[in-house]
Length: 327
Image 1 (cartoon, rainbow, N blue to C red):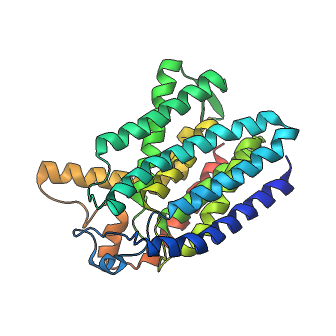
Image 2: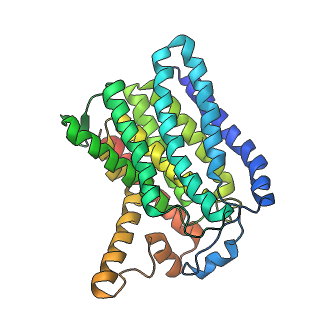
Image 3: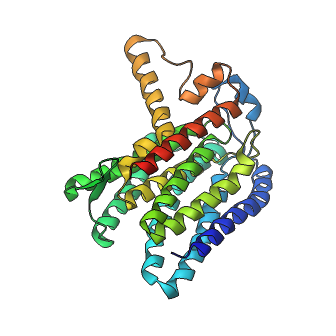
């Protein structure tokens, strides 16, 4: 593996993301692509009203540009690696596109509900199904799933594997989407998860994952500079669905979707907190949290945004180290 190229492409994607931020954030401000805060959200978020959103476009452009660079670099040397980068990019951009349509309707067209939940899920379903079929039928990656800590791989029948992959992708994208609620949280947690998956790619010498993972990490870190508290830009559904798409696609490609239960513990808990809140309220009329997802509960308990992000990142770092030991 050409580690020299991997470091260069990571740095290139970081620089591209930073430069694009300087260009795109003023354009978003000029176009008044501002955040609409929920009336029922934390009161501290009201002052964020008008902060440019749909910033996920910064990461998506950086990923596309650098992936083209990675493709061209490998096309002459190892064309198979170059070809295998494409589906990873397509699925990531695809999920981002669903988020873009949702954001566009909400922010530009002033349709507060955005894309209907049915259409939003349908869009994600189409992309996830396409990816599942592509990796099994065209790339012939097989239907194996590695069991963490057990040092073993189980082979699933195609009829079970494809729905399982779809479920993992839909679950991951929406979990990252729920994690995106305070400055820098989804970006920093996703950066750590993506770094872990990229390290696994290095260990297993899966070159296309190392290249694509490095590009995603660099793009995330560049965006994070502008997304940390006090955020100059939010990623929107465009960014969160795209990051969820990238994380799930890489984990599935590595045959390690079950590893996400460990390394993506924060998004998993965020999702469970929403489910617990809804179930409790519908069955007993009482809320188990002050507000869901979980990060809002801590906010309303008096925690500062930076404290929540720091603690959630430390938790993610710990579970990612555990995840690396499990393979």
